[in-house]
Image 1 (tube, rainbow, N blue to C red):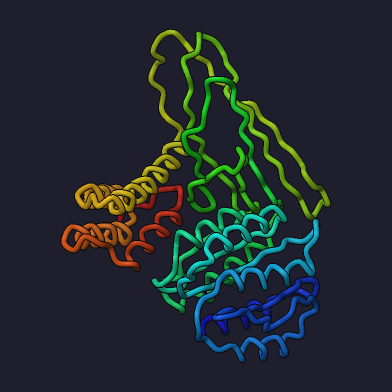
Image 2: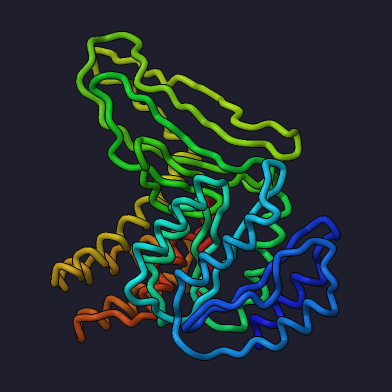
Length: 355
């Protein structure tokens, strides 16, 4: 019912030139509302109200049916996006889901993958979002659906550029250790054929990327380390494949440089990356059966979170650390709360409240 009310609100906020389609999927996919602009709001809401939950969770069938509807109005000057909501596991079609997401990304169609509750595959939804240039999100309870859906839809309405890709071209002896998106949300970025898919850029949400590089020893002097090429489309200006290139250079000196303060923006970004790696390392250790390391990493994460004023998330980390130390496994809810809570941390540390 929460999802239906959220969908009704989306219908009410549509503009005449917006197109909407609604697809449900359980054991099979069903097109409840075919893709259409100039939506008849009363009829659309009546159709949505007939949706009944039940059956299995065939995500692949839902994605395919949804993408087929989106293609009807897809174009260079249109922001085309699929919002996937699921509260269950899908079995046996994971590779197909990822392949469809990859093809959608190549067509500049992003996918926002939202999991409701605890019984869904977060690794799969993350990969679907990453391959398409979209976003994955955790909805702890159905009552949060309305706010999160509204936030996402309004964000899509402010898209300035889409189909963004970043291609780093490295000089000899330079390589990339890791890449992270820092804002508007935190995630590890994985290149495909040396290209990083960044999805869309909203007009009111700056995009911040951190690249960790390895650099072989260089003689003293200025050296070009890499060139960054950003490619994207600007629908409002009818510009396709716009490119922006920037060189990254570094000066090497033969002696130790004098100490200089690190810019606050860099410190804050690295704090977020460190927190993300801590929780990532904890789950990796747990998969290996190393309970001691997993517990220690979560406890360290909690300390960092308390220092940043993120008391609620810090307590959640301590709670899961204690549970893992005692029982050897985290709760599904705790795992997702920490994973997605860390992603949504703001760059600027909050003031720590006094208890």
